[in-house]
Amino acid sequence: MADSNITKTALARALRELMEEQPFEKIQIAQICERCGMNRQSFYYHFKDKYDLVNWIFDTEFITFAVAWTKDLPADDRWGLIERACEHFYENRGFYRKALAVRGQNSLSDHLREHLSPLIKTRIAKIVGEDVADEFTTNFFADAVLSAIERWLLDKHCMPPEEFVAKIKRIIQSGAVEICREMIEGE
Image (cartoon, rainbow, N blue to C red; front, side, top):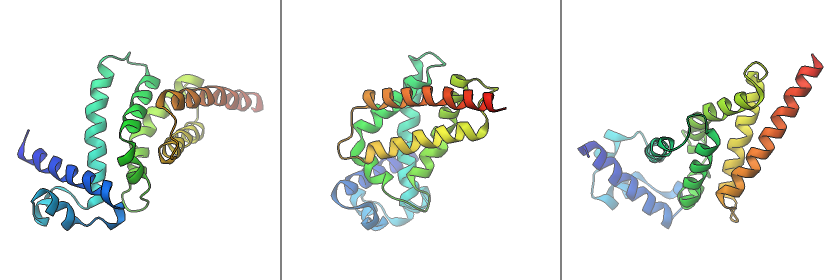
């Protein structure tokens, strides 16, 4: 592992530990650095702020897992990828609950939406047909799924990921088909 990744990983581990002990808003860069024996200059060399570090944690984990997940999934199995992503979120829900509760600046919520929206849009277009799924419809369902993921993770009685994805899948497939049918009939 390159020195840069070793440093980033140490900072990420320190932030995760601190998030188990106190609210994210109260964590200071100095605490993160102190926890892993680094100075603030090292932190700011790699990250703009603690929000950037949270997003890096997500990117690193998600990309690492997504690459591994897609190796044994058929290329068009987007639901399989979404289910595995939800399994990862569920297994790490303590971290994601705290990170998703933070709003503003470069929040994980916005970052997650940026990364997952294209996957969800592709799946919606495939369900209802590329020629029927306009931008509004795909954005509507992508926003709905991402909001549902956040609400699901933030719920203290978070249902198992398989159950959550099955519900989302059923709602999207039947809802998207019905909306597009109505759009076609209304023309």
